[in-house]
Structure formats: C-alpha cells, structure tokens
Length: 287
Image (cartoon, rainbow, N blue to C red; front, top):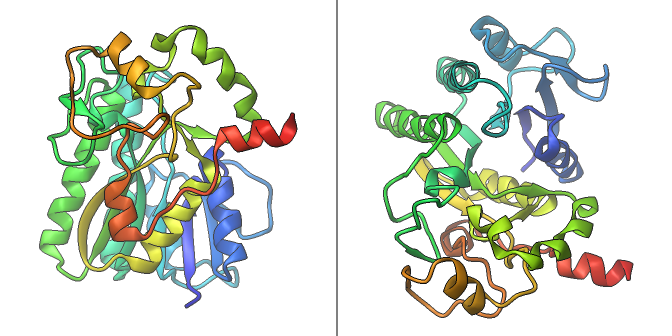
C-alpha cells in the first residue's frame, strides 16, 4: 500500500538512500530538512521549531496533504560535532517536536533513528556479553547517546498514552556508502581501531530496507531493533578479535568467522530484515 511519508533529515547520509528507496517502492515522500535543492518533494523545515514541524506534517499548499507516516532521521548525527549542550538541545527538541506533532495530527506510524551508541559505545567499559542485543538496559556513554536513550523512553510513554500509536526505534550501526568500503582493509592492522562498536557497520541501502520493513510490518506499540550489516568490518576472524580485545567478556553463542557481533536476530525475526549488502562483495566486484 502506497503512503505519503515525511522523512526528516532526508538529505543526510542515510536519509538520501531512504528517500530514494521509499520513492522507488511507490510512496510519495516529503523530504523535510534544513538545507536542500528546491523541488522533488523537498521542504525546508527547522525541526527545532514546533510550529514549522506540525505545519509541514499537516500539509503545505499544493505540495502535499497530511502525511500517513513519519521517518524521523533529522539530528546532529554523532557525538563530538557540536558541544554537548547544543547536541542535547537540538536532538531532544527535534524528536519531541516530531513525536508531539504526530500525536496532535493523528499520525499513528513513526519509524525513527535511534543508535547503536545506547548499547554502551565506545565500549571502553566492555559489553556485558557478545554478541550484544536489545535485552540489556541502555548504557549511554555520551550526551548524544543519552539523548537517544531518552528518545526511546519518550516513545515508550507516548505509546502508553496512545495504544494505537506505533513507534519503532532503529538502532543503526555506523552508516556506510559503497565508496566508504575502500578503507575497510586498513582496519585489520589494529583491531582496536574499530572495537568501539564491535567492528560493526550498516550499508545505507540495508538501513533503508529496515525502514521500509518497519513501515510495512510494525503494529501499535514501541519496539527497538539493532540494525547492522550481517558481517563485521574486519577480515580477521571473530574469535581472534574477541580474544585480543575483549578476553574477559562472555560469548553467548557461536560467532561465526565474520558474523556481526551487533545481533540483528530480533530485526530478522520481527521485521523480516535481511542485509543484502557487504563491503566484501563490493571490493571483490571492484577488484
């Protein structure tokens, strides 16, 4: 079923691919961002301004009517880009504005970008077990991650207030485009270069797949899902990586040679998510 979908942050690294994917699937997509070229469903919106957010979602003149669903990706995308207070103010206010506007307008389907950072990144304190999953309490270690945790707590309460509301938090790993893969072989020299997220990543095309699956399959309520590639960024085998970097951490199941250590089993089971892209295939094709 085709929908009118608002994508906040649609000009970002993941957002561009999400917008393209949803349009290819036949949806009308309204791209809400601070900067971008006119046309092609783009609308300039300052997401920290509630009035602009609710007005854009309600419909703008002849451009579009009220949207059916929201994919919320707009944010300062990582720690250390702005000051802690600027990151907190921007990201927390933006998410509250989007969620609150959806509630006021009766929009019942929200899929948004949470983050792998709530798992305890950069794992200076080792994870409780490997592979990590959604079953242990959040461990934010930065202001950016703290906001992501608070956004999830906000969503949990909103769906309690409105049992018909569906909010899906996708805890995306480090987003990559195919042109980023040329750097991956260099990580093998020092396993600690990428230990901060258990050597994980997500191809933007698979990130967009997860968004699409969540829009299609999720019912009312809140759920959080880790979204990562099926493999690690490393050529070195998992057993060697864990023994070198996290020797005291419990390994709860067979890791495979290169299988992701950011468990995507819940997303596979509940969303039907299955990664289609690997850096290994890209570099083999380019060789």
